[in-house]
Amino acid sequence: MAAKRGFAEQEGLKIEVVDVKDDQVGMRALISGQVDSFDSATGGVVAAARGADLKFVGCSWLAVPYVVLGRAGIGKMDELKGKTIAASAPGTPPDIVARASLAAFGVPDQDVRFAAIGSDRDRYNALIGGIVDAAVVANEYTPLPSSKNLNLLAEARQVLPQWIRFCTLVNGQALAARHDDAVKFLSAQIKAFRYAVAHRAETIRLTQEATDAAPDDPRPAYVFDEAVKPGVVAPEFPLPVENLDWMRDKLAALGQIPKTDLARTFDAQLRLQALERVDK
Image 1 (tube, rainbow, N blue to C red):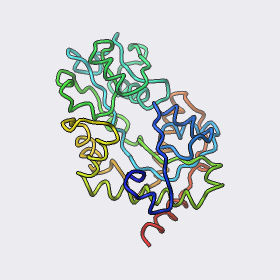
Image 2: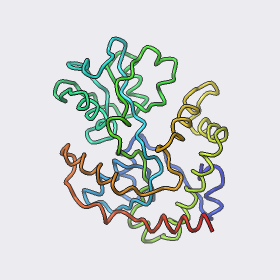
Image 3: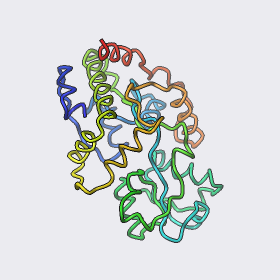
């Protein structure tokens, strides 16, 4: 919305949006300086714990939208024992959701086979194609006609209630060199999010443009209606430190990262400057 509907231009910026396949690719681009900003939460916590030079400046999507879907004949998580679940690489959000969902229903990890499959679309296709028995995918796949014979086994919002989907991360060197532009960038994002949640039809139309979705594709409207539920998207870009620390603790408990203090990576002041700019 910020890049395509003039909000960046209002701030004197031109935003180039770069599509990446998954969280790991985007995080590598951010850390290496190939991009100035990337939206992630899990990737940001992992990279920060390992000493990467980045800053959390605000979080726009507070609830994780993933679900675990099972093929016909599998109606409960405990029926996945001896079966295969499509997730992603270890430590990525789909992998964490899969393990947390199994744990919530008392199923040991070792009783299930994990298939590391990169994108939501690939995991979904593997499920409906009968290659795997269950898959972690974004909830936007649930209203598709091809999902009518699938079963909802778990929701990430239930098993990981404090997990955050997206925070805006900024490369540390880029922030130091272009602080004023970073304030303008976050200002544009806040304006765009406020506009998006208040203009359903326009946001759905832009989603269709960005994703090449067909007019009868139910997903853009479904995602919008899920997103504007209380506690999901946050147009004011808060910085929920307690949630991010909770995520760090969970990742550390899984052995993915060392338990380190993330405080140096939080830049709450930038958000305050952006809000002041937006509301003046």
